[in-house]
Length: 469
Image (cartoon, rainbow, N blue to C red; front, side, top):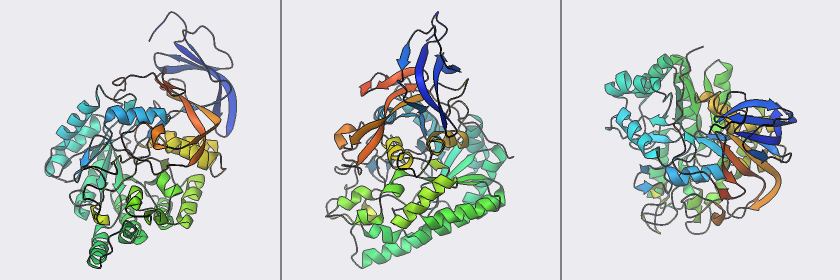
């Protein structure tokens, strides 16, 4: 939108954080970008009065799933419902995954996934290619070409049938990533340990959801993180260990960082707010809390909060995995007698990601406002090659802004949310602080519960390569 006025939009009396200091300013926006930050700005086509509320960068959720089938379960969110839910929760950029099967051509899979986003997404998006087979075509042609084309953040797995890669394949991929400046996200759990323990538990008739935690112990995570850190050290690649769940897992990351390895850690709200005891609920209710790695203990929660405050945990993502609880394509597609190893892993949480951290992290004093902004937006934008366009309030950056009401209190209910899932694991939780207005590239798309943005307005944002230092 271009008008005769100096600005298309001014956000008036915004409390904007610089470090841990907060100042009241006006934000002037033109052509979707922030053009001025000053005490008072006039000559605008539209005014949004922030009324002295916090105005923070729009959230960047660089780990979420939508519009993808996995093992017979199907995501309840496509790009239309998923990005609507994201926007209502104060997110302005997402980065989901193009899942290529072992025999699928990687470049074609990514292109088809991007086409599904076009015309559907309400907010901006990048895409992570997921590599499930390190073929010569992938290593020599598809992956280098995709990195050059703006897909410079990819994901690999060390576990799950059909997804896991062998050590040699991982090293080959890390070498290509290091050569071309891509970030490699890793789901790090030792598959052989998990398979052995799962087999033993099933043979002994231990089928309930609570045994999921026993089948995927901390040592499986710890070993895999240590191995990936060693591989990154050997190849010079930059890696991000996703959904770190435990103190021991985070310690492996920090030890490698002290050696100079280019390794980072991410965690998710479920690891900060739930424990393995939530798996032990009546009947199959524990299935609503099943994700991998599983939730751990309160001591692990404390370690993760401390890591976030100290900076060793760089990114906070939702890992939104929107499987319905009931139905033929949901968590319980194998029926009421499903074993824990037959239940789809993953929790919904895209819309609540920011409010949960704001309430339980910032307002509870566990992290500072600057740390909230860093782990929920800025760091993800930088690591995934989206900065400075995304993740910060800076001159020239996209005008992705969220106005927060610090005093609003919300009791979470499934009916409150906008995703396609039939439950929320956060049902009944009390949250203080809520994103009341979401602005994407200078356009107000959510305002006090009113949906103003249209599906299809979201744009693809290229992920820029990060060359070796």
